[in-house]
Length: 335
Picture 1 (tube, rainbow, N blue to C red):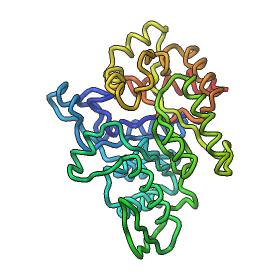
Picture 2 (cartoon, helix red, strand yellow; picture 1 turned 30 degrees about the vertical axis):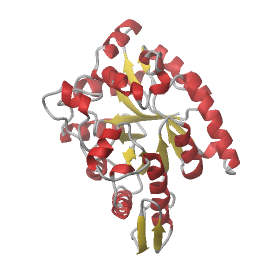
Picture 3 (cartoon, helix red, strand yellow; picture 1 turned 90 degrees about the vertical axis):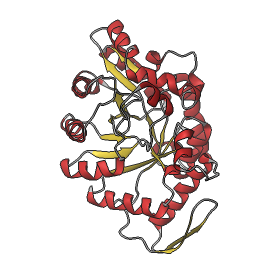
Picture 4 (cartoon, rainbow, N blue to C red; picture 1 turned 90 degrees about the horizontal axis):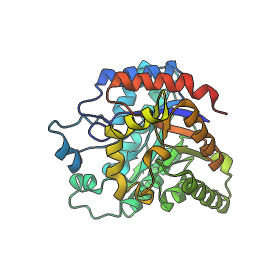
């Protein structure tokens, strides 16, 4: 089981308080992740503040652009990998510039980048950036994957799609990795269909293990229909974690957190299938023993990667403490 850490690039006001992490704090988190043996860090992507966050906080949150953050962190680390969980391609209209940024980052990080795509949880954010662009965001994400892979695979590339167009583009350097890992995020069937068609990994966000097992079975069937093996697909589940001295204390701290409020805000979008399910049951909340039991059930359901785990915390100091404790009290005992 691969274990990685969520990097709070764009989490203020949603999963963490405002303010939360400075630029220096992101370096500290990444360096501790490397020191304690985590596989990678995964940052998310936002461009403008959501309406519900503006209503709750007087101070605007800091949203750090993840590719720029990773370019800096790559120089501050040596083995840690960097994933986008997820980069919202509908908010990035120039696909050639995005391809150039990704290829450059992979070169400068010595092949440590993993590219996760997604539609994005908040349509209002897309509309703020593109008030006159009439699109189906899911179709746009799908075409963005195709257009990017075309640029990475061919010396000279052209594309004439519904949303993206470019002609006679010779883009060099390519990514350093011969095969840049592609992850597709989202809980709905189109997300894992896209993963089966184009990706190396599927990034679902916290859901009950029974739902997950059913979706993994469908993913496996899609892979087989494409002549692919489940062995080549990383099922990279993103969850929240809090390691407590006892179960009750862990649940109480979680329910009083900004992170819990954020999950409630997603009940009409990303987590709409989970209405009526307790978030503390779905996520890695509890004692080390509680958490290990949950991880065992996730593994049986097909999860291969605890991806971009977000540690419940009200300060960066608490986040670092939780990272350390999870690395010492949980990770070594995962079967």
